[in-house]
Image 1 (cartoon, helix red, strand yellow):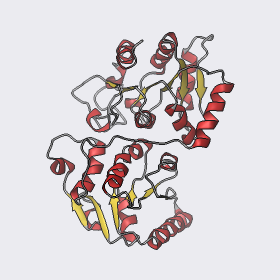
Image 2 (cartoon, one colour):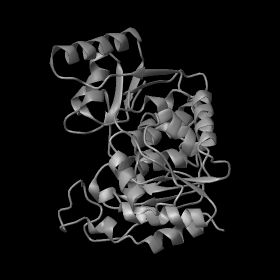
Image 3 (tube, helix red, strand yellow):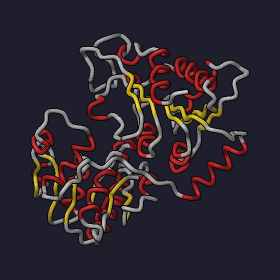
Image 4 (cartoon, helix red, strand yellow):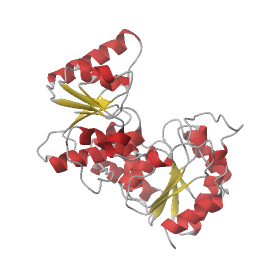
Length: 341
């Protein structure tokens, strides 16, 4: 059983673990424990035999009853081994309370006593000083003796046929018939979010390159899309999607000719669908979070002494200069390198 809670990007980055386990034991049934936000990423995945969706915790008696119900269902599964890929306290407690006899995770202060197999730091497992998030998660397999393929598996996602059909119909109704580029201008916090006006310039540039620009944002990101819209000329025919479910966002990205966006979940989705992409980085660590893909891609960033940092609030400048100093010219140059005319 694999525990991978929380974010979209982190969930995409665990998919090489699925590939490694099935390469070792094709007959091994794999159950993944996830949350509603990220469940659509794994629902169509052929290497996931069972998806166990844990509702996000709520306060009060109702929240306690939901968690107790989830624990009872987990206990009924009689799982042999659990891996805390998330690393957090919630996943460690779920493994312990579910009665999983062998519980594997890293030696973190708040969770190590809940584990039966405590892994050393991933840098020690891999014998190198810098570690990508994918390597961190694969390191737990390596620690318990599961052979990890070389080269390491890349991220991989699959589309639900109904989601692909829905997106095809929406694009057709919007008049999109040729190749299109997906632009995701939002991010989790300010130090990772490039200016909306700059994204409007990229929309114009991609249109000049012969691609239909399609801007997509998720729940709560609508103001960013609106800021991009306001920065565009009134005559511009960019297409905006602000209400797609995640399954359809996946299908939209899977069908695009090119992707550009901030360091965020959709960028990892694009990499997992082997789309050429450019990712704009601010405060986060590109060594840990860069796209895990073999397809053409570029990371655009400014290297400052304070980068990387934890974010979300810049502690070094009044505004997050790491992302503010990235220019439109740098991004268009990266686009040309990845997606030549």
